Length: 294
Length: 283
Image (cartoon, rainbow over all chains, first blue to last red; front, side, top):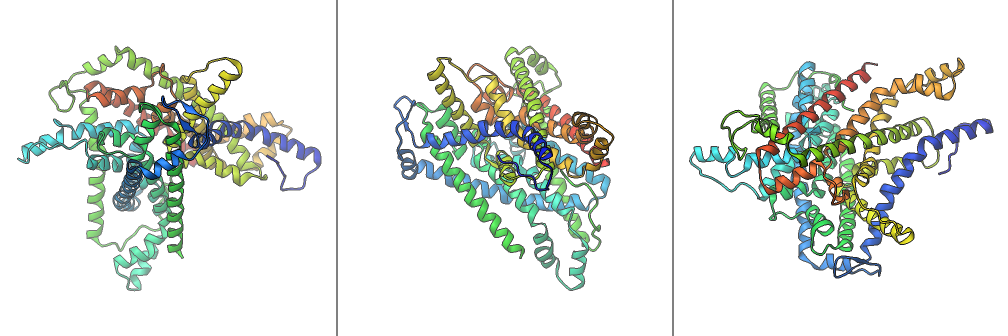
Protein backbone atom coordinates (compact mmCIF):
# COMPACT_ATOMS: atom_id res chain seq x y z
CA UNK A 1 0.00 0.00 0.00
CA UNK A 2 1.46 3.37 -0.99
CA UNK A 3 1.56 5.91 1.78
CA UNK A 4 1.28 9.42 0.46
CA UNK A 5 1.49 12.26 2.97
CA UNK A 6 -1.27 14.82 2.74
CA UNK A 7 0.86 17.64 4.15
CA UNK A 8 4.12 18.80 2.60
CA UNK A 9 6.99 17.68 4.80
CA UNK A 10 10.76 17.42 4.51
CA UNK A 11 11.79 14.11 2.85
CA UNK A 12 13.39 12.48 5.90
CA UNK A 13 10.36 13.29 8.01
CA UNK A 14 8.08 11.84 5.36
CA UNK A 15 10.13 8.69 5.32
CA UNK A 16 9.95 8.34 9.08
CA UNK A 17 6.22 8.99 9.02
CA UNK A 18 5.69 6.33 6.36
CA UNK A 19 7.74 3.85 8.31
CA UNK A 20 5.76 4.36 11.51
CA UNK A 21 2.46 4.20 9.59
CA UNK A 22 3.56 0.94 8.01
CA UNK A 23 4.46 -0.39 11.45
CA UNK A 24 0.99 0.46 12.74
CA UNK A 25 -1.00 -0.92 9.83
CA UNK A 26 1.02 -3.82 8.44
CA UNK A 27 0.45 -6.47 11.16
CA UNK A 28 -3.34 -6.06 11.28
CA UNK A 29 -3.75 -5.68 7.53
CA UNK A 30 -1.61 -8.74 6.90
CA UNK A 31 -3.64 -10.77 9.36
CA UNK A 32 -6.90 -9.74 7.68
CA UNK A 33 -5.55 -10.40 4.20
CA UNK A 34 -4.34 -13.90 5.06
CA UNK A 35 -7.11 -15.01 7.41
CA UNK A 36 -10.09 -13.17 5.99
CA UNK A 37 -9.68 -12.07 2.37
CA UNK A 38 -7.73 -15.11 1.19
CA UNK A 39 -10.26 -17.57 2.72
CA UNK A 40 -13.08 -15.81 0.86
CA UNK A 41 -11.14 -16.07 -2.39
CA UNK A 42 -10.57 -19.77 -1.75
CA UNK A 43 -14.33 -20.23 -1.34
CA UNK A 44 -14.74 -18.78 -4.85
CA UNK A 45 -12.22 -21.32 -6.18
CA UNK A 46 -13.98 -24.18 -4.36
CA UNK A 47 -17.37 -23.20 -5.79
CA UNK A 48 -16.13 -24.02 -9.31
CA UNK A 49 -14.43 -27.27 -8.30
CA UNK A 50 -15.93 -30.76 -8.56
CA UNK A 51 -17.07 -32.88 -5.65
CA UNK A 52 -15.66 -36.39 -5.75
CA UNK A 53 -17.75 -39.45 -4.82
CA UNK A 54 -16.34 -39.59 -1.27
CA UNK A 55 -16.66 -35.87 -0.69
CA UNK A 56 -13.04 -35.20 -1.62
CA UNK A 57 -12.70 -32.10 -3.76
CA UNK A 58 -11.41 -32.68 -7.29
CA UNK A 59 -9.67 -29.74 -8.94
CA UNK A 60 -11.45 -29.76 -12.25
CA UNK A 61 -13.46 -26.62 -12.75
CA UNK A 62 -17.03 -26.25 -13.96
CA UNK A 63 -20.39 -24.67 -13.14
CA UNK A 64 -22.01 -27.86 -11.83
CA UNK A 65 -22.54 -26.58 -8.28
CA UNK A 66 -24.28 -23.44 -9.48
CA UNK A 67 -26.41 -25.50 -11.87
CA UNK A 68 -27.44 -27.76 -9.01
CA UNK A 69 -28.47 -24.75 -6.92
CA UNK A 70 -30.85 -23.58 -9.61
CA UNK A 71 -32.45 -26.92 -10.27
CA UNK A 72 -33.10 -28.34 -6.81
CA UNK A 73 -36.12 -27.19 -4.82
CA UNK A 74 -34.32 -27.88 -1.56
CA UNK A 75 -31.93 -24.97 -2.05
CA UNK A 76 -34.52 -22.64 -3.51
CA UNK A 77 -36.78 -23.29 -0.50
CA UNK A 78 -33.95 -22.71 1.96
CA UNK A 79 -33.21 -19.32 0.40
CA UNK A 80 -36.86 -18.31 0.46
CA UNK A 81 -37.39 -19.52 4.02
CA UNK A 82 -34.23 -17.81 5.30
CA UNK A 83 -35.04 -14.46 3.75
CA UNK A 84 -38.70 -14.62 4.82
CA UNK A 85 -37.70 -15.51 8.39
CA UNK A 86 -35.16 -12.68 8.29
CA UNK A 87 -37.76 -10.14 7.19
CA UNK A 88 -40.29 -11.40 9.75
CA UNK A 89 -37.75 -11.25 12.57
CA UNK A 90 -36.61 -7.75 11.55
CA UNK A 91 -40.18 -6.48 11.35
CA UNK A 92 -41.20 -7.92 14.72
CA UNK A 93 -38.02 -6.59 16.33
CA UNK A 94 -38.72 -3.12 14.91
CA UNK A 95 -42.33 -3.18 16.11
CA UNK A 96 -41.29 -4.23 19.62
CA UNK A 97 -38.04 -2.27 19.71
CA UNK A 98 -39.15 1.16 18.56
CA UNK A 99 -41.68 1.84 21.34
CA UNK A 100 -39.25 0.32 23.85
CA UNK A 101 -36.44 2.65 22.76
CA UNK A 102 -38.88 5.57 22.91
CA UNK A 103 -39.82 4.64 26.46
CA UNK A 104 -36.14 4.40 27.42
CA UNK A 105 -35.32 7.84 25.99
CA UNK A 106 -38.27 9.44 27.74
CA UNK A 107 -37.37 8.00 31.15
CA UNK A 108 -35.54 10.16 33.73
CA UNK A 109 -31.71 9.87 33.45
CA UNK A 110 -31.12 7.55 36.42
CA UNK A 111 -33.83 5.17 35.30
CA UNK A 112 -32.61 5.37 31.71
CA UNK A 113 -29.19 4.06 32.72
CA UNK A 114 -30.83 1.03 34.35
CA UNK A 115 -33.11 0.41 31.37
CA UNK A 116 -30.15 0.59 28.99
CA UNK A 117 -28.18 -1.75 31.17
CA UNK A 118 -31.02 -4.25 31.10
CA UNK A 119 -30.80 -4.29 27.29
CA UNK A 120 -27.03 -4.63 27.32
CA UNK A 121 -27.04 -7.80 29.43
CA UNK A 122 -28.90 -9.95 26.90
CA UNK A 123 -26.87 -8.20 24.18
CA UNK A 124 -23.67 -9.58 25.69
CA UNK A 125 -25.06 -12.94 26.75
CA UNK A 126 -24.24 -16.06 24.81
CA UNK A 127 -26.69 -16.69 21.97
CA UNK A 128 -26.63 -20.41 22.66
CA UNK A 129 -27.58 -19.89 26.31
CA UNK A 130 -30.44 -17.62 25.34
CA UNK A 131 -31.76 -20.09 22.79
CA UNK A 132 -31.45 -22.89 25.30
CA UNK A 133 -33.51 -20.88 27.80
CA UNK A 134 -36.40 -21.06 25.33
CA UNK A 135 -36.02 -24.81 24.99
CA UNK A 136 -36.56 -25.01 28.74
CA UNK A 137 -39.65 -22.80 28.60
CA UNK A 138 -41.21 -24.56 25.63
CA UNK A 139 -40.31 -28.13 26.54
CA UNK A 140 -42.99 -30.78 26.99
CA UNK A 141 -42.92 -30.54 30.78
CA UNK A 142 -41.94 -26.87 30.79
CA UNK A 143 -43.57 -23.88 32.40
CA UNK A 144 -45.70 -22.86 29.42
CA UNK A 145 -47.13 -26.34 29.07
CA UNK A 146 -47.84 -26.50 32.81
CA UNK A 147 -49.81 -23.27 32.48
CA UNK A 148 -51.64 -24.59 29.43
CA UNK A 149 -52.59 -27.74 31.34
CA UNK A 150 -53.65 -25.70 34.37
CA UNK A 151 -56.02 -23.50 32.35
CA UNK A 152 -57.49 -26.55 30.64
CA UNK A 153 -56.04 -26.19 27.14
CA UNK A 154 -53.87 -29.24 27.60
CA UNK A 155 -50.35 -30.08 26.65
CA UNK A 156 -49.12 -28.76 23.31
CA UNK A 157 -46.12 -29.72 21.23
CA UNK A 158 -44.55 -26.25 21.26
CA UNK A 159 -41.19 -27.10 19.80
CA UNK A 160 -39.64 -28.08 17.43
CA UNK A 161 -41.70 -25.76 15.25
CA UNK A 162 -41.34 -22.77 12.98
CA UNK A 163 -43.12 -20.58 15.52
CA UNK A 164 -40.56 -21.54 18.17
CA UNK A 165 -37.75 -20.61 15.77
CA UNK A 166 -39.31 -17.20 15.15
CA UNK A 167 -39.66 -16.55 18.89
CA UNK A 168 -36.05 -17.60 19.43
CA UNK A 169 -34.82 -15.38 16.61
CA UNK A 170 -36.73 -12.32 17.84
CA UNK A 171 -35.54 -12.99 21.37
CA UNK A 172 -31.93 -13.27 20.23
CA UNK A 173 -31.91 -10.21 17.99
CA UNK A 174 -34.09 -7.71 19.85
CA UNK A 175 -31.19 -5.93 21.66
CA UNK A 176 -29.46 -5.39 18.29
CA UNK A 177 -32.52 -3.43 17.14
CA UNK A 178 -33.10 -1.53 20.39
CA UNK A 179 -29.56 -0.18 20.86
CA UNK A 180 -29.20 1.74 17.54
CA UNK A 181 -32.80 2.96 17.86
CA UNK A 182 -32.04 4.20 21.34
CA UNK A 183 -28.92 5.99 20.08
CA UNK A 184 -30.94 7.60 17.28
CA UNK A 185 -33.87 8.60 19.50
CA UNK A 186 -31.65 10.10 22.19
CA UNK A 187 -30.41 12.60 19.59
CA UNK A 188 -33.95 13.40 18.46
CA UNK A 189 -35.14 16.92 19.25
CA UNK A 190 -38.53 16.44 20.89
CA UNK A 191 -39.44 20.14 20.51
CA UNK A 192 -40.02 19.33 16.86
CA UNK A 193 -42.96 17.19 17.95
CA UNK A 194 -44.36 20.13 19.91
CA UNK A 195 -43.90 22.38 16.89
CA UNK A 196 -45.80 19.86 14.81
CA UNK A 197 -48.53 19.72 17.38
CA UNK A 198 -48.77 23.54 17.49
CA UNK A 199 -49.18 23.50 13.73
CA UNK A 200 -52.11 21.12 14.13
CA UNK A 201 -50.60 17.78 13.15
CA UNK A 202 -52.15 14.72 14.76
CA UNK A 203 -49.97 12.37 16.79
CA UNK A 204 -49.93 9.84 13.94
CA UNK A 205 -48.91 12.54 11.46
CA UNK A 206 -46.21 13.81 13.80
CA UNK A 207 -44.80 10.33 14.23
CA UNK A 208 -44.84 9.48 10.53
CA UNK A 209 -43.68 12.86 9.23
CA UNK A 210 -41.25 14.00 11.92
CA UNK A 211 -40.02 11.33 14.32
CA UNK A 212 -39.80 8.33 12.01
CA UNK A 213 -37.84 10.08 9.20
CA UNK A 214 -35.43 11.68 11.67
CA UNK A 215 -34.73 8.41 13.47
CA UNK A 216 -34.55 6.38 10.25
CA UNK A 217 -30.76 5.93 10.50
CA UNK A 218 -31.21 4.04 13.79
CA UNK A 219 -33.96 1.93 12.29
CA UNK A 220 -31.84 1.13 9.23
CA UNK A 221 -28.80 0.24 11.34
CA UNK A 222 -30.91 -1.92 13.65
CA UNK A 223 -32.58 -3.70 10.75
CA UNK A 224 -29.25 -4.57 9.14
CA UNK A 225 -27.85 -5.75 12.49
CA UNK A 226 -30.87 -8.02 12.95
CA UNK A 227 -31.38 -9.16 9.37
CA UNK A 228 -27.88 -10.32 8.38
CA UNK A 229 -27.15 -12.61 11.36
CA UNK A 230 -30.72 -13.95 11.31
CA UNK A 231 -30.61 -15.04 7.68
CA UNK A 232 -27.28 -16.81 8.16
CA UNK A 233 -27.78 -18.43 11.55
CA UNK A 234 -28.29 -22.13 12.12
CA UNK A 235 -28.26 -22.57 15.89
CA UNK A 236 -31.79 -21.34 16.60
CA UNK A 237 -33.38 -23.21 13.69
CA UNK A 238 -31.44 -26.32 14.63
CA UNK A 239 -32.32 -26.27 18.34
CA UNK A 240 -35.87 -24.87 18.24
CA UNK A 241 -36.89 -26.07 14.77
CA UNK A 242 -35.44 -29.54 14.75
CA UNK A 243 -35.18 -30.94 11.26
CA UNK A 244 -38.46 -29.25 10.35
CA UNK A 245 -37.11 -25.77 9.74
CA UNK A 246 -34.24 -25.86 7.29
CA UNK A 247 -32.61 -22.50 6.81
CA UNK A 248 -29.54 -21.69 4.71
CA UNK A 249 -27.26 -21.90 7.71
CA UNK A 250 -28.40 -25.45 8.40
CA UNK A 251 -27.74 -26.50 4.81
CA UNK A 252 -24.29 -24.87 4.85
CA UNK A 253 -23.41 -26.52 8.12
CA UNK A 254 -24.41 -29.94 6.81
CA UNK A 255 -22.68 -29.55 3.45
CA UNK A 256 -19.42 -28.57 5.12
CA UNK A 257 -19.27 -30.59 8.28
CA UNK A 258 -21.82 -33.35 8.48
CA UNK A 259 -23.46 -34.67 5.37
CA UNK A 260 -22.29 -37.97 4.15
CA UNK A 261 -20.38 -37.33 1.96
CA UNK A 262 -19.78 -33.58 2.40
CA UNK A 263 -20.00 -31.30 -0.62
CA UNK A 264 -17.73 -28.28 -0.29
CA UNK A 265 -18.08 -27.02 -3.87
CA UNK A 266 -21.86 -26.95 -3.55
CA UNK A 267 -21.63 -25.37 -0.09
CA UNK A 268 -19.26 -22.72 -1.45
CA UNK A 269 -21.60 -21.88 -4.32
CA UNK A 270 -24.54 -21.76 -1.90
CA UNK A 271 -22.63 -19.38 0.39
CA UNK A 272 -21.53 -17.09 -2.44
CA UNK A 273 -25.01 -16.80 -3.94
CA UNK A 274 -26.28 -16.14 -0.42
CA UNK A 275 -23.76 -13.31 0.05
CA UNK A 276 -24.66 -11.82 -3.34
CA UNK A 277 -28.40 -11.89 -2.55
CA UNK A 278 -27.79 -10.46 0.90
CA UNK A 279 -25.74 -7.59 -0.53
CA UNK A 280 -28.48 -6.82 -3.07
CA UNK A 281 -31.19 -6.83 -0.39
CA UNK A 282 -29.21 -4.63 2.00
CA UNK A 283 -28.20 -2.14 -0.72
CA UNK A 284 -31.79 -1.89 -1.98
CA UNK A 285 -32.97 -1.39 1.57
CA UNK A 286 -30.42 1.37 2.21
CA UNK A 287 -31.37 3.05 -1.03
CA UNK A 288 -35.10 2.96 -0.35
CA UNK A 289 -34.70 4.37 3.16
CA UNK A 290 -32.36 7.18 2.16
CA UNK A 291 -34.76 8.22 -0.58
CA UNK A 292 -37.56 8.49 1.97
CA UNK A 293 -35.44 10.99 3.85
CA UNK A 294 -35.52 13.50 1.08
CA UNK B 1 -20.68 3.68 21.75
CA UNK B 2 -24.07 4.42 23.22
CA UNK B 3 -25.06 7.93 24.02
CA UNK B 4 -26.48 8.20 27.52
CA UNK B 5 -26.88 11.95 27.56
CA UNK B 6 -30.28 13.54 28.07
CA UNK B 7 -32.54 14.01 25.09
CA UNK B 8 -32.49 17.53 23.69
CA UNK B 9 -35.80 18.36 25.33
CA UNK B 10 -37.91 16.13 27.53
CA UNK B 11 -41.22 15.59 25.78
CA UNK B 12 -44.09 17.29 27.57
CA UNK B 13 -47.12 17.26 25.37
CA UNK B 14 -47.34 13.50 24.99
CA UNK B 15 -50.83 12.37 25.87
CA UNK B 16 -50.98 10.49 29.14
CA UNK B 17 -52.52 7.34 27.64
CA UNK B 18 -49.70 7.23 25.13
CA UNK B 19 -47.08 7.23 27.86
CA UNK B 20 -48.96 4.60 29.85
CA UNK B 21 -49.14 2.41 26.78
CA UNK B 22 -45.40 2.84 26.21
CA UNK B 23 -44.66 1.96 29.82
CA UNK B 24 -46.81 -1.14 29.69
CA UNK B 25 -45.15 -2.18 26.46
CA UNK B 26 -41.69 -1.64 27.95
CA UNK B 27 -42.54 -3.70 31.04
CA UNK B 28 -43.86 -6.61 29.03
CA UNK B 29 -40.81 -6.51 26.76
CA UNK B 30 -38.48 -6.64 29.73
CA UNK B 31 -40.46 -9.59 31.08
CA UNK B 32 -40.12 -11.27 27.66
CA UNK B 33 -36.35 -10.64 27.75
CA UNK B 34 -35.76 -11.74 31.31
CA UNK B 35 -38.29 -14.47 32.12
CA UNK B 36 -36.40 -17.15 30.16
CA UNK B 37 -33.06 -16.15 31.68
CA UNK B 38 -34.42 -15.99 35.22
CA UNK B 39 -36.09 -19.38 34.86
CA UNK B 40 -32.86 -20.81 33.53
CA UNK B 41 -31.04 -19.62 36.66
CA UNK B 42 -33.80 -20.88 38.96
CA UNK B 43 -33.86 -24.29 37.31
CA UNK B 44 -30.14 -24.71 37.75
CA UNK B 45 -30.89 -25.10 41.48
CA UNK B 46 -33.90 -27.41 41.20
CA UNK B 47 -33.93 -31.02 42.38
CA UNK B 48 -35.94 -32.03 39.30
CA UNK B 49 -33.77 -34.35 37.22
CA UNK B 50 -35.22 -32.97 33.98
CA UNK B 51 -34.46 -29.44 35.09
CA UNK B 52 -37.69 -27.94 33.84
CA UNK B 53 -39.72 -27.51 37.05
CA UNK B 54 -39.14 -26.54 40.67
CA UNK B 55 -39.02 -29.44 43.13
CA UNK B 56 -36.67 -28.08 45.79
CA UNK B 57 -33.24 -26.50 46.20
CA UNK B 58 -29.96 -28.26 45.48
CA UNK B 59 -26.40 -27.43 44.46
CA UNK B 60 -25.83 -30.94 43.09
CA UNK B 61 -25.73 -29.88 39.46
CA UNK B 62 -22.94 -27.41 40.09
CA UNK B 63 -20.94 -29.99 42.02
CA UNK B 64 -21.53 -32.48 39.23
CA UNK B 65 -20.33 -29.89 36.76
CA UNK B 66 -17.04 -29.35 38.54
CA UNK B 67 -16.46 -33.10 38.55
CA UNK B 68 -17.24 -33.33 34.86
CA UNK B 69 -13.83 -33.72 33.26
CA UNK B 70 -15.04 -33.09 29.70
CA UNK B 71 -16.81 -29.90 30.68
CA UNK B 72 -13.84 -28.63 32.67
CA UNK B 73 -11.39 -29.27 29.82
CA UNK B 74 -13.75 -27.52 27.41
CA UNK B 75 -14.03 -24.55 29.78
CA UNK B 76 -10.28 -24.33 30.17
CA UNK B 77 -9.78 -24.49 26.39
CA UNK B 78 -12.36 -21.79 25.80
CA UNK B 79 -10.76 -19.48 28.36
CA UNK B 80 -7.35 -20.10 26.79
CA UNK B 81 -8.66 -19.32 23.28
CA UNK B 82 -10.41 -16.17 24.51
CA UNK B 83 -7.34 -14.93 26.39
CA UNK B 84 -4.83 -15.42 23.59
CA UNK B 85 -7.12 -14.09 20.86
CA UNK B 86 -8.01 -11.08 23.02
CA UNK B 87 -4.34 -10.19 23.55
CA UNK B 88 -3.48 -10.57 19.86
CA UNK B 89 -6.54 -8.81 18.48
CA UNK B 90 -6.24 -5.96 21.00
CA UNK B 91 -2.65 -5.26 19.97
CA UNK B 92 -3.35 -5.50 16.23
CA UNK B 93 -6.63 -3.60 16.50
CA UNK B 94 -5.17 -0.77 18.57
CA UNK B 95 -2.28 -0.32 16.13
CA UNK B 96 -4.74 -0.26 13.23
CA UNK B 97 -6.93 2.28 15.03
CA UNK B 98 -3.91 4.55 15.64
CA UNK B 99 -2.87 4.30 12.00
CA UNK B 100 -6.39 4.95 10.72
CA UNK B 101 -7.13 7.91 12.99
CA UNK B 102 -3.76 9.63 12.91
CA UNK B 103 -2.80 9.43 9.28
CA UNK B 104 -4.27 10.28 5.92
CA UNK B 105 -2.96 7.98 3.20
CA UNK B 106 -3.90 6.51 -0.14
CA UNK B 107 -6.06 3.42 0.27
CA UNK B 108 -7.46 4.56 3.60
CA UNK B 109 -11.07 4.28 2.42
CA UNK B 110 -10.39 0.81 1.09
CA UNK B 111 -8.88 -0.26 4.38
CA UNK B 112 -11.87 1.25 6.17
CA UNK B 113 -14.16 -0.96 4.09
CA UNK B 114 -11.98 -4.02 4.70
CA UNK B 115 -12.14 -3.40 8.46
CA UNK B 116 -15.93 -3.35 8.42
CA UNK B 117 -16.24 -6.51 6.35
CA UNK B 118 -15.74 -9.07 9.17
CA UNK B 119 -18.40 -7.21 11.21
CA UNK B 120 -21.11 -7.24 8.55
CA UNK B 121 -20.40 -10.52 6.79
CA UNK B 122 -22.62 -13.41 7.96
CA UNK B 123 -20.61 -15.34 10.52
CA UNK B 124 -21.28 -18.68 8.87
CA UNK B 125 -19.72 -17.50 5.59
CA UNK B 126 -16.56 -16.42 7.40
CA UNK B 127 -16.57 -19.72 9.27
CA UNK B 128 -16.80 -21.94 6.21
CA UNK B 129 -14.27 -19.76 4.38
CA UNK B 130 -11.79 -20.32 7.20
CA UNK B 131 -12.47 -24.06 7.15
CA UNK B 132 -11.87 -24.11 3.38
CA UNK B 133 -8.74 -21.99 3.83
CA UNK B 134 -7.19 -24.22 6.49
CA UNK B 135 -7.94 -27.40 4.61
CA UNK B 136 -6.65 -25.92 1.35
CA UNK B 137 -3.44 -24.45 2.77
CA UNK B 138 -2.71 -27.51 4.92
CA UNK B 139 -3.03 -29.58 1.77
CA UNK B 140 -0.52 -27.39 -0.03
CA UNK B 141 1.86 -27.45 2.92
CA UNK B 142 1.68 -31.23 2.99
CA UNK B 143 2.32 -31.48 -0.75
CA UNK B 144 5.30 -29.14 -0.54
CA UNK B 145 6.98 -30.14 2.70
CA UNK B 146 5.41 -33.45 3.70
CA UNK B 147 4.38 -31.96 7.04
CA UNK B 148 0.83 -32.82 8.04
CA UNK B 149 -0.95 -30.02 9.91
CA UNK B 150 -4.31 -30.50 11.58
CA UNK B 151 -6.93 -28.09 12.79
CA UNK B 152 -6.72 -27.66 16.54
CA UNK B 153 -7.01 -24.97 19.19
CA UNK B 154 -4.62 -22.71 17.26
CA UNK B 155 -6.75 -22.60 14.13
CA UNK B 156 -9.59 -21.41 16.37
CA UNK B 157 -7.38 -18.72 17.93
CA UNK B 158 -6.19 -17.47 14.55
CA UNK B 159 -9.80 -17.31 13.33
CA UNK B 160 -11.05 -15.51 16.43
CA UNK B 161 -8.32 -12.91 16.06
CA UNK B 162 -9.41 -12.39 12.44
CA UNK B 163 -12.94 -11.39 13.44
CA UNK B 164 -12.07 -9.63 16.73
CA UNK B 165 -9.56 -7.18 15.16
CA UNK B 166 -12.34 -5.20 13.48
CA UNK B 167 -14.38 -4.85 16.65
CA UNK B 168 -11.36 -3.70 18.67
CA UNK B 169 -10.46 -1.19 15.96
CA UNK B 170 -13.97 0.31 15.98
CA UNK B 171 -13.97 0.75 19.78
CA UNK B 172 -10.42 2.17 19.98
CA UNK B 173 -11.04 4.52 17.05
CA UNK B 174 -14.06 5.91 18.88
CA UNK B 175 -11.88 6.66 21.90
CA UNK B 176 -9.26 8.35 19.69
CA UNK B 177 -11.84 10.76 18.26
CA UNK B 178 -11.61 13.22 21.17
CA UNK B 179 -7.87 12.83 21.62
CA UNK B 180 -5.89 16.07 22.04
CA UNK B 181 -2.84 15.68 19.81
CA UNK B 182 -1.27 18.77 21.43
CA UNK B 183 -0.44 16.66 24.48
CA UNK B 184 1.84 14.52 22.34
CA UNK B 185 3.32 17.58 20.65
CA UNK B 186 4.03 19.13 24.03
CA UNK B 187 5.81 15.96 25.13
CA UNK B 188 7.84 15.97 21.92
CA UNK B 189 8.77 19.61 22.48
CA UNK B 190 9.94 18.70 25.96
CA UNK B 191 12.29 16.15 24.41
CA UNK B 192 10.41 12.86 24.79
CA UNK B 193 11.15 10.29 22.08
CA UNK B 194 8.42 8.44 20.17
CA UNK B 195 8.49 5.43 22.44
CA UNK B 196 8.22 7.48 25.62
CA UNK B 197 5.38 9.49 24.13
CA UNK B 198 3.45 6.33 23.30
CA UNK B 199 3.89 4.64 26.68
CA UNK B 200 3.59 7.74 28.89
CA UNK B 201 1.08 9.91 27.00
CA UNK B 202 -0.87 8.14 24.26
CA UNK B 203 -1.52 4.74 25.79
CA UNK B 204 -2.65 5.95 29.23
CA UNK B 205 -5.09 8.34 27.57
CA UNK B 206 -6.65 5.79 25.23
CA UNK B 207 -6.47 2.96 27.77
CA UNK B 208 -10.21 2.95 28.63
CA UNK B 209 -10.95 2.51 24.92
CA UNK B 210 -8.35 -0.22 24.57
CA UNK B 211 -9.71 -2.08 27.59
CA UNK B 212 -13.25 -1.62 26.25
CA UNK B 213 -12.14 -3.14 22.95
CA UNK B 214 -10.37 -5.98 24.74
CA UNK B 215 -13.47 -6.77 26.81
CA UNK B 216 -15.57 -6.86 23.66
CA UNK B 217 -13.06 -9.15 21.97
CA UNK B 218 -12.99 -11.41 25.05
CA UNK B 219 -16.78 -11.65 25.12
CA UNK B 220 -17.02 -12.30 21.38
CA UNK B 221 -14.41 -15.03 21.56
CA UNK B 222 -15.90 -16.60 24.69
CA UNK B 223 -19.41 -16.68 23.20
CA UNK B 224 -18.50 -17.57 19.66
CA UNK B 225 -20.03 -20.79 18.49
CA UNK B 226 -20.23 -20.78 14.69
CA UNK B 227 -16.61 -19.96 13.81
CA UNK B 228 -15.28 -22.24 16.55
CA UNK B 229 -17.53 -25.04 15.34
CA UNK B 230 -16.08 -24.87 11.82
CA UNK B 231 -12.43 -24.26 12.66
CA UNK B 232 -11.82 -26.58 15.60
CA UNK B 233 -10.39 -29.98 14.73
CA UNK B 234 -11.98 -33.20 15.93
CA UNK B 235 -9.55 -33.53 18.85
CA UNK B 236 -10.28 -30.27 20.67
CA UNK B 237 -13.29 -29.50 22.84
CA UNK B 238 -14.64 -26.00 23.46
CA UNK B 239 -17.36 -24.97 25.89
CA UNK B 240 -20.02 -23.64 23.46
CA UNK B 241 -19.51 -26.71 21.26
CA UNK B 242 -19.76 -29.10 24.20
CA UNK B 243 -22.91 -27.34 25.43
CA UNK B 244 -24.41 -27.42 21.93
CA UNK B 245 -23.72 -31.14 21.62
CA UNK B 246 -25.36 -31.87 24.97
CA UNK B 247 -28.33 -29.59 24.39
CA UNK B 248 -29.04 -31.42 21.14
CA UNK B 249 -29.28 -34.69 23.06
CA UNK B 250 -31.38 -33.63 26.05
CA UNK B 251 -32.22 -30.86 28.48
CA UNK B 252 -30.48 -31.50 31.80
CA UNK B 253 -30.03 -29.49 34.98
CA UNK B 254 -26.25 -29.60 34.40
CA UNK B 255 -26.70 -27.55 31.23
CA UNK B 256 -28.82 -25.12 33.26
CA UNK B 257 -25.92 -24.83 35.68
CA UNK B 258 -23.21 -24.23 33.08
CA UNK B 259 -25.53 -21.78 31.28
CA UNK B 260 -26.04 -19.89 34.52
CA UNK B 261 -22.28 -19.62 35.00
CA UNK B 262 -21.85 -18.38 31.42
CA UNK B 263 -24.62 -15.85 32.06
CA UNK B 264 -22.91 -14.63 35.21
CA UNK B 265 -19.61 -14.18 33.35
CA UNK B 266 -21.39 -12.19 30.61
CA UNK B 267 -22.99 -9.93 33.23
CA UNK B 268 -19.65 -9.34 34.89
CA UNK B 269 -18.16 -8.37 31.53
CA UNK B 270 -21.02 -5.91 30.85
CA UNK B 271 -20.43 -4.30 34.24
CA UNK B 272 -16.71 -3.98 33.52
CA UNK B 273 -17.21 -2.56 30.04
CA UNK B 274 -19.80 -0.05 31.23
CA UNK B 275 -17.47 0.98 34.02
CA UNK B 276 -14.62 1.51 31.55
CA UNK B 277 -16.90 3.50 29.26
CA UNK B 278 -18.02 5.73 32.12
CA UNK B 279 -14.39 6.45 32.88
CA UNK B 280 -13.71 7.22 29.24
CA UNK B 281 -16.73 9.55 29.08
CA UNK B 282 -15.73 11.41 32.21
CA UNK B 283 -12.46 12.51 30.69
